[in-house]
Length: 412
Image 1 (spheres, rainbow, N blue to C red):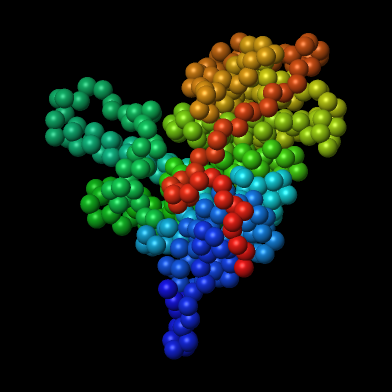
Image 2 (image 1 turned 90 degrees about the vertical axis):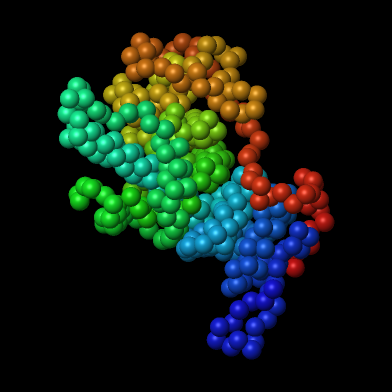
């Protein structure tokens, strides 16, 4: 494979590529897409097996180059999609499998805005599909009422329990949503295009074509949440998730993925992130932050706030914050605990127990926290750490090799 030189075609040269046994930083600067895809495929394997390669990427500018690929790649064909996916997998491997220092470098390289864009646009796409489905059902009801008025006895309303994730996947398969990736430095919201659907009978409805900025795959959402779960373990990184990326609060965004409409794996990792947000900051004397993300008030001394008596993870500065947090999403990741020795209700394969979050608002209020002086043994109990399951990897890392062999990698 050769690297294209469009200014001087006669000077096209052979491309430098990364292999399973050789890492060369120059390969990431290749301008030809096929050699770059080949290098990223092998780099995915190296970042998943070699701690040395993960460390080198944080020192030679390779990590920043991967993030720049994610921010500037415009996907208009399969090759561009592979390029983006491989670069995303590489950064996820570095962050998930790296040390605290390496994970801090991932944040410094600008990966969190990329994750915010992926998660935010995915939720906007789900909302778009939901509105489209509601419009179709409304048009069908209006058409039926005009053709057969005697058959209409009650008003037809859209089903509120529509599986949005499945609907969006169907929209992608049917070609109703584009696969355009256009990252920018500012986290601008996605814009719905003007009506271009000639078959639409409603002139005021939005177009069925949604211009999106990222690849909408469950694997991308899962990798994003896994990476955030490992990054949110550290207090100095958690602090930046609240205010460093306006107008987004990372935890408020992640909390929306604890909803039941998402797959169990996504719900689990989103729950891990939210429980990490409730950890105490040992560097500040062991104080915690109010678990209502729009509040963010810190304790003035340890154990000032009272815990949620159901999950014993979230702490709130007032009943008002507790009520707002419950209505905005805490009810989806609040898992009941019965005693000191009980751990969170997770199954052996790392999936969350779906029965652990099945409670209504009224049930939560019946067990609401006593916001008086919390001096019982529950307030003095230490927080159980989350059991971290095996990280999910995609098939891109499979090269028919074992998990070892990192010592044989050469660095050029």
